[in-house]
Length: 191
Image 1 (cartoon, helix red, strand yellow):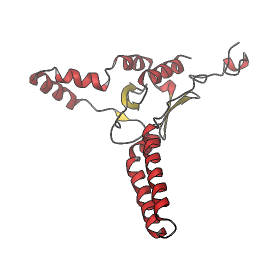
Image 2 (cartoon, helix red, strand yellow; image 1 turned 90 degrees about the vertical axis):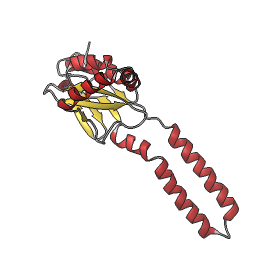
Image 3 (cartoon, rainbow, N blue to C red; image 1 turned 60 degrees about the horizontal axis):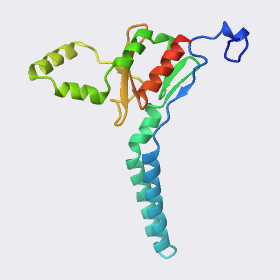
Image 4 (cartoon, rainbow, N blue to C red; image 1 turned 90 degrees about the horizontal axis):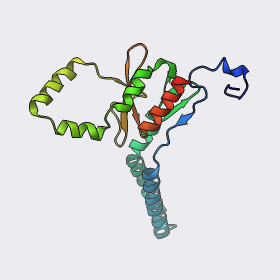
C-alpha cells in the first residue's frame, strides 16, 4: 500500500517528506492593480497623442515602465527571495534549499507557539522601561537567526517563523501563510 506512487516497493525508499507538496501562493493584487492603472494611462495617452506625437508617447511609455518597476520592486523581490516550496523532502525558500530532515521537530512545534509580529509588538508595548532594558541586554548576547533565502530583513506584509536545524543553527523564514507552512513542514518531517 504505501509509497509515493501507491506501490509497496516505493514505501521503503521514501525519505522524509517525499509525499508532501506545498507551495505558498504569492499575493498578486498589488502588481495587477498597478499594471492595470499604468496600462490604462498609456492607452489613454496613445489615443490622445498617436500618430502625430509618437516621440512623446514613447517617452510616456518609458516613464510608465520605470514607475511600474518602482511600484512593484517589493513584490518582485518577494518572488525572488521569499517564494516557498516544500516537496521532495526539501524546503526551498527563494534560491536556497534545505533538507526537511535537517529541521528539528521540536523547533517546528515551538514555532507554532511563537507570537505573530503584531502580538509581539503588543506585548512590548505593555512592558515597563526596566523590562525592556532587561530584554535588550539578553538579546545582545544571543546571536540572531539567519534569514533563509536572502535579504536583509523580513519584507513588509510577511510574518516570520524561527526554526532550528539538527546542527543547532537558527533559521528565520519569512512567510505569508504561517500556519499552512508549519503544517506542511511538520507533515513532511513526520512522513
